[in-house]
Length: 165
Image (tube, rainbow, N blue to C red):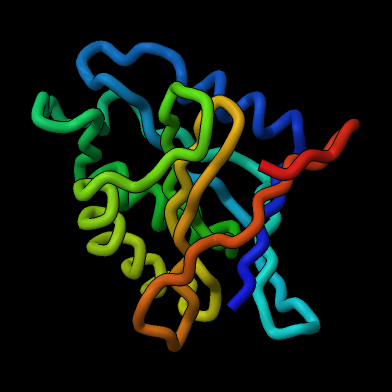
């Protein structure tokens, strides 16, 4: 299934800048992209990112074994935002390097455990996880009524010029 993800240049730059800021103890920052979702004529899904929900500094757990660990308050707040704004939610973090990023074992395990929770508040919307690098991205999308996630097959930063990641 084709899954397309689009983000404006301004939001992409803002997300990268906010996720690149240092945290008092976590080695990386995380957040959630709020998206609108639609169906493509050929049967795929299109995701349009429109804003970032940042995880508050106090909602990180001090766990030096990984880059960042969110506490239960972070998930609860993101679930509430998804419910209130009727948004598809995509967990996001940054790998500061050039080239295509990839999910670590921890990224894969943890996102698979909490991303489907968003169906409790928005059961008809896709939800997922995205990793940005300096010039690329990768992502997974859990689509309602499908057990396994789909890889996001196309990323586009919309602006002048529009570019594929």
